[in-house]
Length: 295
Image (cartoon, rainbow, N blue to C red; front, side):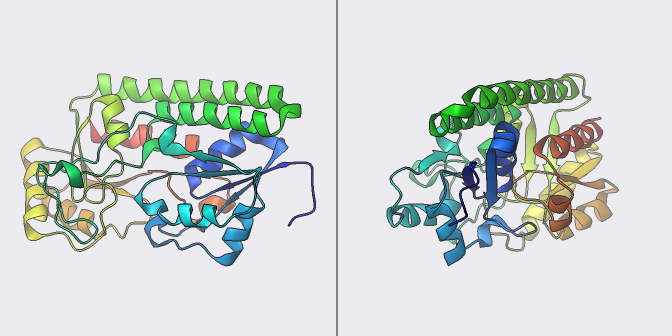
């Protein structure tokens, strides 16, 4: 274990809660992210070092969805009665993943029938809506304050300041959508942005549902997306971070649309991480990208 530096030791699985913990915790916490910058979350496997980091933590933050199935096993084996665990999916109102028209529905090795309620997955990408981000930050503030009451006032102050910034971001997105020429976005990629689309009343077309295994899209999916972009004169086709972007290239070549990245904030490149990238920076870029896509 690290020598006691007097800080609250926080471990998170992915980038968004890592940054939220930094913003709320400030200098009173030491935050570790398990997912290596530049890596895809669906390929993540915890190492023995990661398991030790969780065992030695004061607070452990994880998402709670299917990609975190390993967490329960690890927590059962962790002998730390003082460990406080925050599950992002417990902080917000949950939505189901949605298979919209044209979306390739094969997922996690089984075909996904829209009518099959039992098979319907809860969407785990809760942090993509700034409103949910604010809810998560308030939960982190409460958890940090309970674990480290000496700095409760500082946590509350920082949380309040940060939530104000998230509220401003929310207002920017609302303004873009309210004043837009259209309300439809196209993602030539997975679509882990159900909460974001729901928050701002956006319609979307995408190649795959939220956590789909990124296989090659079917010819029907590619043709459907090309037809949609052409028919509606959609100027931008989105990809998400750490994606190869090949499908977007194909659609852009066929339609003349522009390819842009929309950050889902699940991870960042090693370079961006080293440069101190933040959720707010990435989301501000999304504001500009969305404005271009909707006009």
